[in-house]
Image (cartoon, rainbow, N blue to C red; front, top):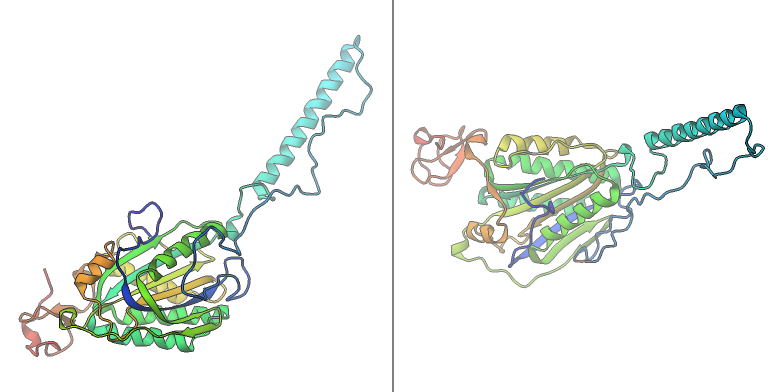
Length: 347
């Protein structure tokens, strides 16, 4: 999903939030859920060894063995035009047969170096959403529950966790503030895994202490130094990163500032089943309720997030007195108590 970055990843910020949480798992090699993606420990590590990737190598088929340069007939000794013509005809026929067989191998993708059958390609998509204080605590609680109770060891379990995460984000639509997306072209498994791991590592680098991690059927709960919220930070926001790798193509988000397109991407994730989902990763920060992130801190930590167009968020109006957004079906502003009749859409 495009942030205008050539590497298609979220860049690390110079500072980090205190706490975060994550869960995920799956396999890029086409095996069962939770196989080779890894996901223990506190990070994805450097180096170039991603494991479990698809590495196409050249293995000639047992059919065509190639032209070996020999000719089994009687050597041409000159003198006969018919003999020379016959030799030329045989040579041309042999070369044409070899060319046809080689072309058919290229068309069928028969283990030719550097080619990857389209059925082996994996599409990686990602969404990063900043959610304001009205839904922050609820979303944090939902994600923590999934991390504690979710099944990350099977494909179906991961698909359920992806679906519940996407539903939780959909229900928090009135609280969407900022967003960014990662659009990656369908690629060979080892290339898709490289993009996926880098994006996940960048998101997890945004905080220092991972309070909970559930990956590939193994969970870990950790502690962090005591957090104290300050008045300047207010009720705070939470940033949720949802990364999916799928065995089918996912429609890219052209404009993350348009809430309609964000909804469409979440609907695609909700529709993924265990057979079409390859790998899932969900990361959120902060994870501790007392670890507050103000919008000012958000803009420093996540400089590439873009403000979601308020007019595209369905059913939201703004209080004429305190300017806070709320659902238009309410009779009064839940923030200051002003009558909803004076509220208006933001122009």
